[in-house]
Image 1 (spheres, rainbow, N blue to C red):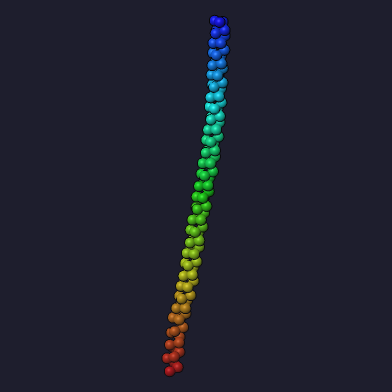
Image 2 (cartoon, rainbow, N blue to C red; image 1 turned 180 degrees about the vertical axis):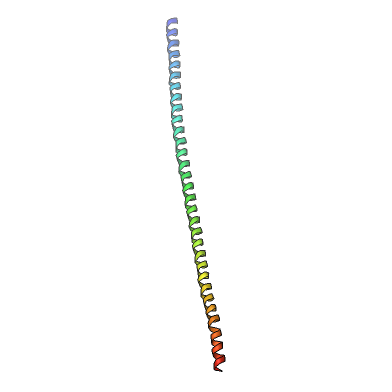
Length: 114
């Protein structure tokens, strides 16, 4: 009877120990699985943040090109306006000089004819 109780106690104790070992393995598996999942999630967040950062940098580059093209277009329009003013002022000045050269001859001719 004592021997059977000792054997029964030993069986119960070995089952408790085995259950503890199995439980510790399950917990260890969950820890490893959670670390793998967490590392994958962190890696995904890093990749996603780099993609977002790349899009931000690309959008800033595109915006810089748009601003630069507008500045170049503004300078081109301004140069055309300045060139038009120069040409117009030369034409007006040449007409004015021509009229000042011709007008005395016209007046002199008119005076001599009258």
